[in-house]
Length: 226
Image (cartoon, rainbow, N blue to C red; front, side, top):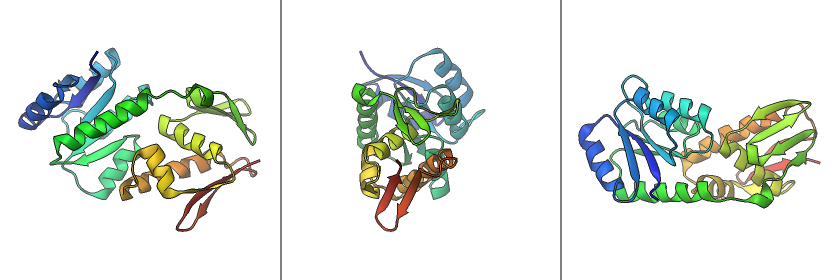
């Protein structure tokens, strides 16, 4: 069965060319505005989302945020003519898996689609058991961390990042290793996104002084925990 892709693009010419290429391998549902796309997302299951940023009624950033509220796992790729690094970082902060700047090559887009689809299908049952870190309990299967009866919901990427830190507790992790394992490459903009995710984890653990994520200058990070 073909994987189902939600594709949102209001440029009719670009949408036709892209959808025509993608439909050779995938089941593509194309929409021209964010509201219609989100309505479809709420009714159907999609394996991956490809979103333009500049969309009528609901822009791509708003759409991605709404999608993430309902589903923290589905891969999201932004396609945009907006080249400012602030826009790329904003997209990645919203939980997108990648941000391609127009004009993009179909070969690159399809390669990224395949990478993210394969990654989302990987299962690691042995790593889905509950684990304790300081006064917190981490549930990787449900992307959740609990302390004193209070549960914080993580995104899939936050959960994967925390899992990597726990698996390498009290050991320095190089920035390149983190980026390649969690994001798939060590692009500069993805590095900025990683810093945002690490800041988020630090805030989660701030009430337990026995846990800290240390910045090792020009090398990487180290999770220090009992």
